[in-house]
Each structure stands twice: as C-alpha cells, then as structure tokens.
Image (cartoon, rainbow over all chains, first blue to last red; front, side, top):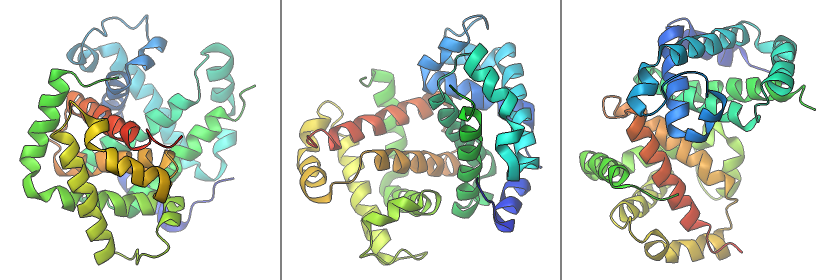
Length: 147
Length: 142
C-alpha cells in the first residue's frame, strides 16, 4: 500500500484546491489523445477527433475529462486507501471498457505536465514527486482488479 | 515513428528560443528525475546529488549538448548519436526505462518555463523527438 507523508499530502492538496477540474480535465484528456493518438481507440463515439484543434475544442472530450479528474478528486481525499476507492472503477475499466492499464500511466503523466504548465514556480521538484506518487498509486489501484 | 516537417519546425523553434539555456532546463529535469523516480539515483552513486550540485549541473550540460546536437541532426539521429549509443550500451548500461523518466521530467520542466509555447502540438513533437533520441541511444544495447 502506498503511504503518503504529511508533506506529500500537503503538496498535493495545495495544488488540487486551486485546480479548475473542468479546464484541467479537458486539457489533460485532450493532450492524451493528441500526444498518444492510439488512445483515441477508446473514443470512437465522441465525435470530431480529426485534428488537435478539433480535439481540444470537442465538448464531449472536455466533459469526459472533467469526469475523470472529478474521480481523481476522490483519490486526493482518500490517499490512504486508493485501492478501495477505485475497486469498482477498476472492474469497470477491465470488464466493460477494456482499457490497457498502460493508459493510466500515460494519463497520469500528462496530468502532471498540465499541472506543471499551470502552476509553474509552485510546481517544484518536491511537489512533482508527490504528484508522481499519487498518479502511480491511482494507476495501480485502477489496475488492481484486472484479471 | 518519425518526425514530420511540423515536428521538426516546432522542436527547432523551441531550441532557438532556449538558446544557451538548454543546460539550465536539462539540469532541472535531472533533479526532478532523481526526486520523482528515486531508483534513477542508483546510476549516480559517485555523484553529490544534493540541490545545486555542481556535478549534476555539469552532467545536465552534457545532456543538453547531446540533445542540441540531436535537434540539429534530425535526419540522422542514429548516426549523430552513434558514439553516445556505444557508451550507453557497453559502458553505462542504463536501463532503457530510465530515459523515459528523464524525458517526462524534461517535458514537465519545459512546460513550466515555456507555458505559452507548450501547445498540445509542441508537447507531441517534443515527446516524439525525445522518444527518437531514446531509441537511438539504446539501439546498440543488444
């Protein structure tokens, strides 16, 4: 089980409380689909993904990004039991969505890059390290129920 | 995977903007790599890895010079990085996964220093460029 120190928790929440979940969610998911175009395989029914501009402007992608980051908000509030928090979502991603867990790592790293671009000076190496731990923990939790 | 004309233009534009400061960003990326992915420190037992380390700064500059060389030889990455590839294959033997940790931290660094330039397309082109550099570096591993 991942253990977060008080400092790591503070580093994570100090950033999270300033995040606009819809904006960051849309940006993160959009960038995932642009930088790693093969991830578009899960979004065939989401409308126009024909260009970077189309993807970043696509309201359904934005809405889904918001959904994903809202979920991450639960992780931030429950850092000490990520596996429990994500048990149901893990089953969903395996059994219904058929998403390769590798994608959770890609999304997590894309989120870290987006946060870095938003928070600049505040996103120190220590803050980044805490966030890397969180996204790795979430990725593991989401993959935990795979069979 | 190869770099399109757009990819090349974007990478070169950022490199021009960074000018002689590439070493500052690669050094920061190294510091971030050591902090976020502590296992990477196992390759530097002989280094002082504390903040502001002169050894890390010097190493950052070496990496910067190699990336700048790569950025100006996008038509022949394997050729231009051949000597470095031999070094990493036979002497340093750095596990390939670690180049991805460093590449990620370099993107994090560039995103925070150049947020206005770091569009999704720039992000994608840089990621591709670093991926190709990594491929060239590990090409002689076995």
